[in-house]
Structures are given as C-alpha cells and as structure tokens.
Amino acid sequence: MTAAILRLNERTFMSLKRSRNYRLFFSGQIVSVTGTWMQRIAQAWLILQLTHNSAIAVGFMAFAQFLPFTIFGLFAGTFVDRIDARRTVIATQTGAMLCSAGIASLVLAGVARPWEVYAIAAVNGTIMVLDAPARQALTFRMVGRQELSNAVALNSSLFNASRIFGPGVGGLVIAAVGVGWCFVANAASFLAVIAGLLLMRKSEFHPVERGERPAILRGTLQGLQYVREHRRALILLALTLVVSTFSVNNNVLLPVLAKQTLHQGPQTFGVLSALFGAGALLGALLSAGLGRASTKWLLTGGTVFTGAQLLVAPERSVYVVGLLLFVSGVGFTLWSSNTNSSLQLEAPDHLRGRVVGLYFFAFTGSGPFGGLLAGWLSKVGGTELAFLVAGAAGLTAIAMATTRLRAPVPKRSAEPVVDTPVEAQRAA
Figure 1 (cartoon, rainbow, N blue to C red):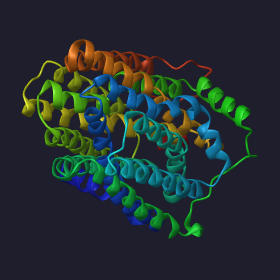
Figure 2 (cartoon, rainbow, N blue to C red):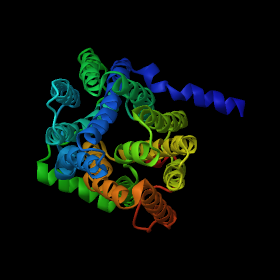
Figure 3 (tube, rainbow, N blue to C red):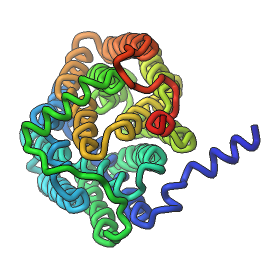
Figure 4 (cartoon, rainbow, N blue to C red):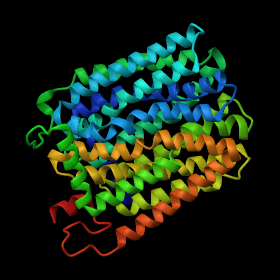
C-alpha cells in the first residue's frame, strides 16, 4: 500500500519534471486561470445585478457564451490540424485579454448594459472555440504521448485549483470594490501565459505525423467518419454530449442557488464555487497519479459527479450543499480528464486535432441549450428542479454508457477491451 502511494506521488507531476516548455505553460496558466475564474463569477453576478436577479438572464449569458461552440465547434479541430498550435494559442489568449479589458472599461465607467455583456461573452466564446483544441494539441507537442494523460490531468488540476482561489477572491473583491475590478485582474493575468508561450523552445516540441493539410469540410467529415467507425469513441462522445447538456451548468445554477435558494451574498457564491473547485482539484490530482486513462475511473467519476448533484436538489443547508459540491467536483474531473485523455491517445496523429475538436464540440457546444434549460428550470421549479434534472439525466447517461462499453465488441472491430490502459490498448 505504501509503495503504491509512493508510485502515485512520483507520477503526479512527471510531465512538469520532464518538459521545460510545459513548465513555462503551466506557470503562466497558474496566474491566468485564477483571473479567468474571478471573471466568471463576476460576469454572472453582474448579470444578476443588471437584470434584478433574473435566472433566465444568467442562462441567456451562458447561451451567448457557448453558442459559438455550437456553430463553429464542429470545424475547430480541422483548423487546428492545419495550423501551428503555439501561434494559435498566443493569438487566442491575446484576444481573450482584449475582451476582458473591454468589459472592465464598461463596468468601471458605469455604462455596462446586459446586451453588451452578452456580446462580449459571445466574442470571447468565439475565440475559445479555437483556443480549446489548440491548447490540447499544444499539450501533446510539449509532453508527447508518454506523459499526455498526466499533463491533461495536471491541466485540470490547475484549472480547478484556480476554481478554489479565483471565485473566493472574486467574491471578496465584488463585495469590497465591485465587479469591475475582477475583469481588470483577469485582463492583466493573460500577460503571464503569453510570456510563457513566447519563451518556449521550438526545438523541444515532440514531433507529430501529419498528412496533407485537410480541407475544412472534407477534414471534418474524416473526423466524423473516424468516430463513427470506432465504437468506444462514439460512446464517449455521446456520453459527453448528454452529461454536458444536462449536468455541466454550475455557471448558471450556483449564482442562483446562492442568491435565491440559500438567500446568501457573493461571498457564499464564491465559497460554493471554490468548494466544487477543491473537489475537482482532488479528482484531477488522482487522475494525474494514475498515469493512464481508465474507463473504470471515467465511469466512476461520472456517477459520483451526477449523483452528488441529485442530492443537492432538496438541500437548504449551506454546509451540506458545500460538502456535496466538493464531492461532485471530485467526480467531475475524474470523468472529464479520463474522457479527454482516452480520446486523444486513441486517435491517430493526423486526426487528433479533429477528435479533440469533436470532444470540445460535445462538451461545450451544448452549452447554449444547457444554460437556457438550467435557467428555465430554475425559474419554473427553483434550483431544486434544475439539480434534480441534472442528476437524473446524468446518472441515466452513465448507466447506458456503462452497458454499451461492457457489451461484447463485434468480431470485425479491433477496438480495445474496456478497463485496459490506453497505452496497452495501442500496443496490442
């Protein structure tokens, strides 16, 4: 047991130890992602202030932010397979910085209106359509196949560690000096990640096998054909689509839960967001320590994530809700990081960007409809109904995916056996 724990600890930060480029990227993200979480809660709280506590308005903000993924996300991976990932991430991070500076100016000047917040959220969402798969492609170039699962999990751990501090600090900043300064902090934070990207050594990137540059439509169809012909990839993407639509809506539900259901202020909103983030951080570190993508932990994480949401529905105690959100966070990153790693490692080099693009299309492209649904359910039946639907739909999808993944593989297919490490599957 002790030896196993030691091996887990040794594996947890392996990609950081082995890659200078990844250390630069990771260090910049520590600063930048904390600012991102400050902006996220500030944006939701700003909309509640501007619309007199409208849950529908918060849902519409999510609609505006994620609609670009629905429109363009299907083709984003093909773009990533055509262009340089590092240059793309530099461009997208610069664009996101300008969006943050723009909304900060409007809020501090006292002239921000809801439609302007929605518009900037939509522009930022459009930038992120390309940023998300490009960052994943860049991660592969920085650490290579051997450490990809570890790096993906560490990226999740960083994102969720920032989810702890960002919302907590953001809630305090909102209470002390107003929402505008959260946007200022986020704009400044992008400088750290851009600096890290500029300092990377191109000679240390891992090579990838590339075919000819794919045409956008034909390349997208090739990615879809790959998924259709690989049952495991199809099941994982379908599961991601359902869970993301119904269950990944904390950006809409948590501000409404804090303000309307629990009758608390921005500090409580920040703390609840931070508790979910603390759990998600633990789940990400567990995934990083595994050193491999695991179907078992993917399904277990999804069950814990959505099951805890179901238990949140009837609760009125801030302390119990916080505990359940912590547990839900653990399950969330066990599910999402193992899904992401599995799809990337199983895809061939020349299709990896497209497969990652399809993953983010499934994960985020449903955001507009999921956000509106969560806002509408909160208006009709409170957050009680919204969390009930989120938990029940997620658990149903996990159960169906479990059944399908455990079903015998047709003889004509050479797909891997469930619960075999991805590295072993590819070597077999």
